[in-house]
Image (cartoon, rainbow, N blue to C red; front, side, top):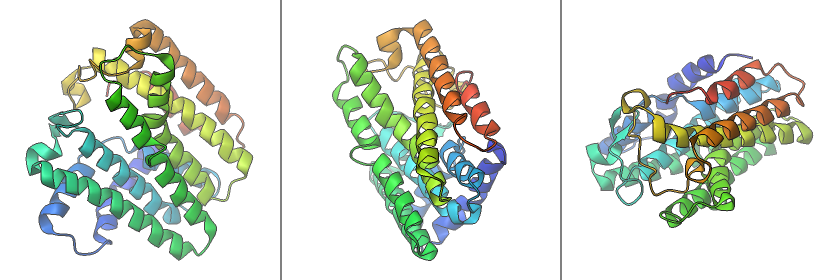
Length: 289
């Protein structure tokens, strides 16, 4: 398979043309959408989707609209997360957040537009395929991003602010707010390639544990990170239900490493060369942003 860096570059090149393919968007709205969508980032989710699909002998070209749609969904969630009513943050990926540049009204609409545009991209791609695999992939992504997935996790994150940390609640928030949107690309990518159900299940297992490790590391960085390196302000999770609040710094490091081990064990159930997926999981606990 290709490296994650190659998939990142493929995604970067496709994002603006995919947005253009939606048609004539009002200039200020499109400017705000592109401001956040092209602000950089690791493009983890589209890379996971493209890598999963190609590993299972699927078509990168057919998977690309779904990968870009997933990045659009992720970006919309960040725009809304940064709003004053949510995390009230003024820095994202080293740049002022969307509402600081465009105002809250356009920032909200830019997030809405990215979510709806993502659904439109996937619908068109599914129609072009003329089979049920595209429809299934879209359902996976929208469900994982939706009211029982990412939004459910975000809701409990907001409602539990200031409460004493509990393992069941922290795990629920991490599983949905973060892991769901990392399970979605692996599950959808394998689905698009027509992988067997047991292979898709192993992919989900990998992504779930990797997602928990990712959020645990995020919680650590909020305590120990450097804004200049991270591109966002640390110390924003003081009243939130985080793994560090529940377990402390050292135990969170151990727990993250254990989740990475479980993720790599799940990869061994799959018949393809998934070295890039294993490397990515291992790098999670050493990242600085």
